[in-house]
Length: 453
Image (cartoon, rainbow, N blue to C red):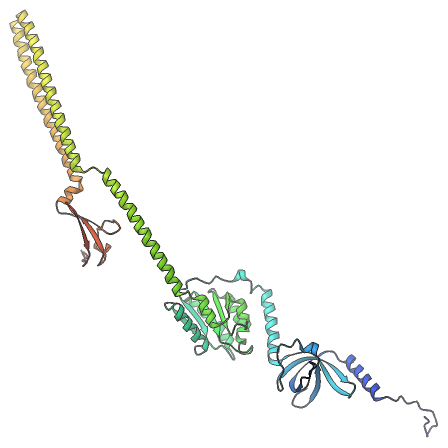
């Protein structure tokens, strides 16, 4: 082509529409990286191919978008018109129509997406610090003495927990620590109340609970201040937050997690029927062991009674022995006297044969003297032995319980064969046994009067 003013030949690089669109697309593809864009969905279309076509708009502009089937298969939600989303997109151009568009690589709900990223970041950081380690977590008591519940006093969670605890173990005391479970400063309230419960030590188990809701509704339990308050608490903590599919940071750091507030109440409370059944079994076992021990002790008592010699019988045996000794003594005396007389007669005969009158008289006097001394000595020995026997019989009678019982006293024992020395050892209605001088009395206590001296 020739320029009319200069007469020079001019070269024109003429584009076709296809070439123009192709080069613009190349410039867009190479000139922009993947971008994150937050906007509102509109004009959503779902053809049979499985691709998604829609527009992203804000209050001033909009742009056409395409999300191909291999990408939208990974969506964790169902996109709807008017929904706020966060997308990662590549800028491009649809060449056949020359339309500027975004090719979507990833899409997530805008609100939950930001919260989810914050959730994942905090979870990763706390996990790296060891706050989720099971070795750090405390053991849940099998039979708590008191339960503390940290939740909203007007929510459904406290109603579910109270109903469950009343059904399973009505005797378990409950302390409610009221907090806000949603909204501004709710996380600070929860953390402060955990610290308060830990400082007061009124409970030996804590439940941190809230009913179901969205991720944003449950966000107070994903705050780091709540997680660290749970970790620093010396009281075991069980969480029951949301529904079964809901997981919060508090669940990961808690000593144990339950799927729901009701589940948390069931987890920490003993089953009343199971405990009653166990106590009944233990009561039956104790009763059987008591009867067995009582039977064994009765057998031992009977065996000892057979071996125990009655003091009266022993006295009769000793009296019989005394009679035997007395007879032997009498026989010995008679034999001694007979022998003495025989010797005297023999000596007398010898004296007569020798006829020494003075010696005879002397021997006679000596013999009489010896006989008198012998008789006195024997009588003295007899009296002495009788006194010793009387002293031993008196001493034996003194220590004999039969003598005490014979004076009107009684030995009182309870059902366990224990001697009752004080009135406070029994209570009205107890069965007791009184051993008297002759026989036994089985009694029931109808009134107790204690000495106040």
